[in-house]
Amino acid sequence: MPATPLSPHPSTWCPTPPPPPPPLRPPAAATRVGCSSSFLWQPRRRPPVLAVVRAKGKGEASFTDRILDYIEGGPKLRRWYGAPDLLPKDGGAEDEDDESSVGVRIDTEEPRDAVLVTNGDSEIGQMVILALILKRARIKALVKDKRSTEEAFGTYVECMVGDMEDKSFTKKALRGVRSVICPADDGFFSDLIDLKGVQHIVLLSQRNSGGLQAIMNSKLKKLAERDEEVVLTSGIPSTIIRTGSLQSTPGGERGFDFTEGVAAKGRISKEDAATISVEALDSVPQKTLIFEVANGDKKVADWKAWFTEQIKRNEEM
Image (cartoon, rainbow, N blue to C red; front, side, top):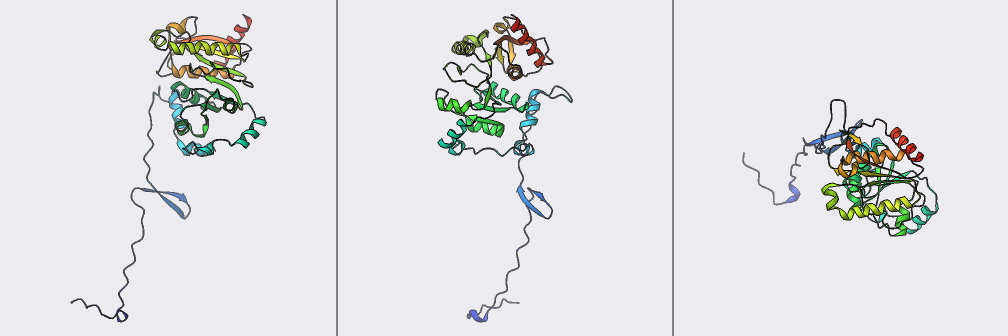
């Protein structure tokens, strides 16, 4: 039938209300989370990228595999372990202590149970941090890029950015630190700094490293010599590990060679070097322990026992 014309008088015309909209339904790409009768819709997230790295065999995980299991769970894994969420990414003023709080914390003695890792955003520095996380150590790290390090490790690591020549920053960085691991020849000890309270220094030194790497990094070799000199004269119990040429190869696949002079001609995986430096923390020598190491054929099943034997021999000399 023809449409009824609209009345010119609005008061005499009452339009039919439109039908109610259909009920909202979650989009196909959404997932439902929650419990009981309430739920939230969240857009589907991209599945995490799983890095399959060098598994040695069924039931046997490599160093890097165990790290991925521990770290790459992201925020969910941090909640499982009771850790808070990531710190703000801007690395702004809210991350820094104000003047009054700094003064209070400096005056208050706190337990010295932390390990400070210098050059923490270098490749080998990150390997040291990962090995320390597996040991559930309290970690502080000197880094250049605070944001990227926090994104990589979350609240497992307290990142420090600053100049060690600044006495106030040095005091802040070393607050609560029991041991220092210097995994790279970055000249950390080249400038006189106050290491009061530090009970153990572990230095990975490339002083005796040979080959093309030593020729290209002659400046770094001088820094290594200076670092060793400062550590030796500091009076702090120290472990100096003179490694062969550091290689970006899988760790845990070969044994070791500790013979004198091996650092000048041998090579060692960075992962293995990082592992040794962390294992050295459990054995504090009465005086400085110095040894050379490269990859070889000798397997070490118990690092604590190995270090105990080396310290005993060193003290008998």
